[in-house]
Length: 97
Image (cartoon, rainbow, N blue to C red; front, top):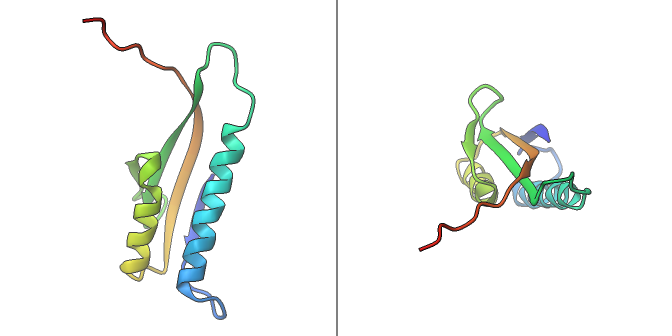
């Protein structure tokens, strides 16, 4: 998902837009996680970027997406860019003591 979300709408208030955006992101992540895993892959991992536009996006962790969306709402931004790309993930073993 590579998308620029707008936080302005003539009829819908900003808190409802933010809730809808968070719900859309959650649905996308769930849909990607439910896809069948290729051989030798343990789980689906995600590369995420957040910024004002596509060029100024900075890398963030998947669990920080809602925090950054809420910050954009508090800062009264008109729009923001969010990129979430699924990639195969491999579990690392803990070192033996």
